[in-house]
Length: 141
Length: 141
DNA sequence: ATTGGTGCAAAGGTTTTGCAAAAGT
DNA sequence: ACTTTTGCAAAACCTTTGCACCAAT
Image (tube, rainbow over all chains, first blue to last red; front, side):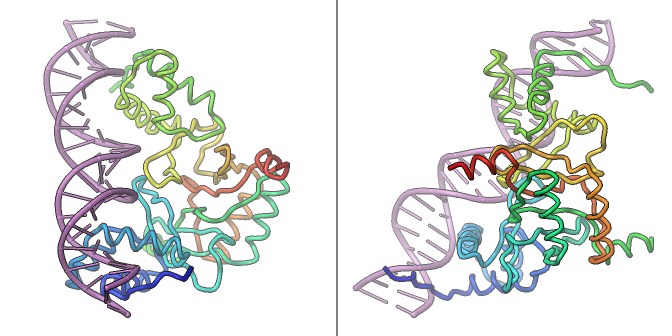
């Protein structure tokens, strides 16, 4: 059995392009669709969803449940690291998503394990807050 | 202007009852509806949703976006503490939800602020993992 | 009697699925 | 040619809203 073939289409090129341009944010299927429209491509939403689920299976992108309660948001995986080894912190103002990929992750895991008997699985875990920039803007007001 | 009146109805009594019985888990509107059915009450889903949003406004319960991507989950607030002062950690196996209400929260906040310029807002923040019990069960297999 | 609560039906929004047609290789 | 992608339409979900009727106080 062989690896599946993979055809290059404009729709996919542009979807990936959009995800790349927004690698520090999560985006919705609708966002992508809007971008495609703006590019003059007419691509059905179904196609967007289908490609997204494929990218999820290939672990090229991560899928989070949207804080809006309805539906999903997506983001390109950072190339180097598996996203299930760190948690994510998202700015509720600008949408920026930090991959909390630092030494503190170990402290957090250790604390949860030792004090709460809890074994952290990072994938899908999101904390919310305000990023540096948005904080400053807020204060400036 | 006076506080709104509040009528006691069976539906509400049982909804609160179910939330109390499951104060260590998040539940969906459908879960509640099922419980009401099992109790022999016939209550419309709309009623459940309406009462839930009221409870949210009154801050009696917290509303999280479901990790399933579609819809919301709810949980009774722990009486003493505001849920926006700590984060939540949820077991992906049994659904148990821990309110991470301990000293470590300060470390976490401090780290995010100092190293990442990020100001944590706890409400809605959930981490996922396996709780103690489910961990043991897993290992027993 | 008055105010608040409920059921029903419909609408809103997002995601998924089946099938036949279209496009990439 | 062969296989993958796509569009369309429909369905599946979950949640919200409007309105008329019912129930609690």
